[in-house]
Image 1 (cartoon, rainbow, N blue to C red):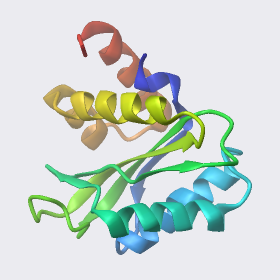
Image 2: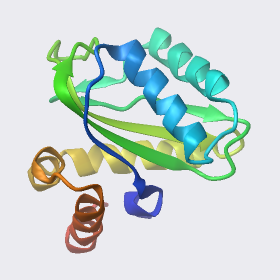
Image 3: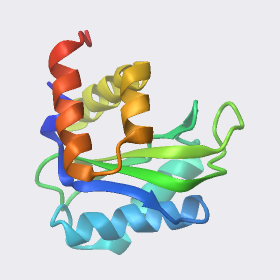
Image 4: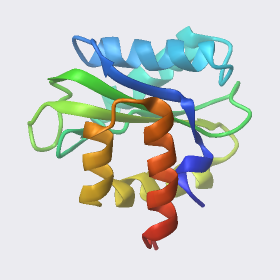
Length: 156
């Protein structure tokens, strides 16, 4: 399984001006509704909020993984948001976040949820991946580079 299977170029948003965690979650929910991942952005937003209330998905290193399951989602989706300015995300290392990799999973595919989270986590441990996400300024080019990177690295 590759993340690029669930991340489409239209799911990549670069240099987004979002002020805080709540605005990021709302942006992700709205983007998912706009891209046909879900119909009800408010329901998805609530799911993302509930997950953050359990424990922050700011994992450190400037990365946030907001994620949730959703009854409307037909397939898993990954949304990548690179922020124009890092924001506080209550991350484990207390550093601000500039990369958001949000995951929406159909409610009945909980094992896929864990697999995608693990895969993204491993991918984010690759400095080349983070460099590309932080430097490439075109969503289509970034998507292609992520696909190439996934072909050339081993993510067991």
